[in-house]
Image 1 (cartoon, one colour):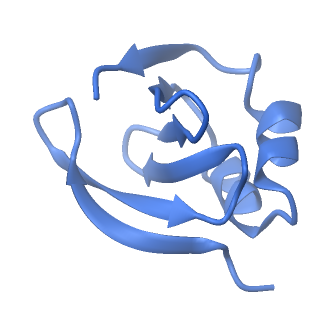
Image 2 (spheres, helix red, strand yellow):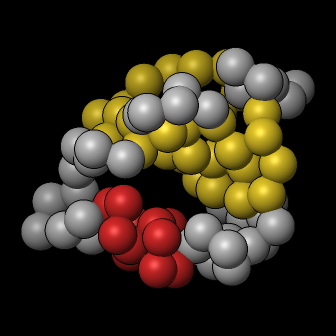
Length: 89
């Protein structure tokens, strides 16, 4: 299966730049993953809000990108399982 994402350069609200990937999902608009910090950034399509999820293992990010339904995978494996903070857009 091919991941449903399209890379797009974007500066984060933090000091270092992170590439956000546009994804084919009705729930999520963009995602990125910081491999060193294990932080998943997700921008939601309906609200336009962006959140950083802390201590997310690489395997869960990979699973998200390759999931048939990104929203269902996110809800089952990430939402309510990791600390998060909203990032100003």
